[in-house]
Length: 204
Image (cartoon, rainbow, N blue to C red; front, top):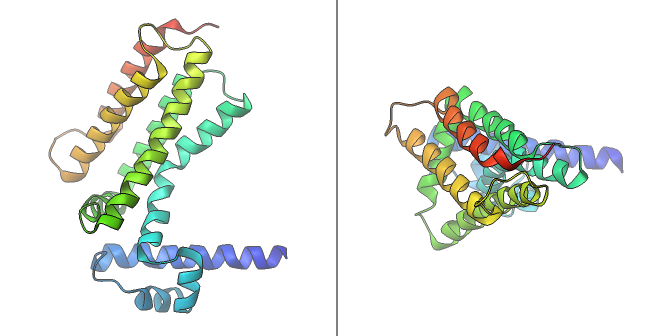
């Protein structure tokens, strides 16, 4: 049973890696499921089994971006992180550094942003993804508020919305090349400065 699960995980990784490479090389719209299957060395049925369709593949690739937030939310729920806002700063810095470190990430984000306007189904999936990430951020701020670590007059809801809008704006401008700043260190410095002002109510 364990080997079967490992094989399934390996197959899933191979398909996802093949899809990511092809999306970058040919563009999302130009790539077929047959091409992804052939590149991954699997059948088209395997692609359908693990991801459903091409949009499911794109969603799986995109979901990796939210992993640091998900991990942090789980650590906070388990009580293993003492300072929620400091930990949030660390998580977003790791995410932005990862995006900036590999030119492929910038191109992938460009694909995600373009797909948002392709079909209604894809636009809905993009909204669901953004909703999941926003939900994780809201959970982190809710923990900070509950621990007295969020300065008045901020509430968890207001801080989460402001944080999301700020980070989303930085990423979109950076992907489109509409600004001369970098995510690291420029955007990270601004984000950490703002988090520090929000954390002035933190109790030891």
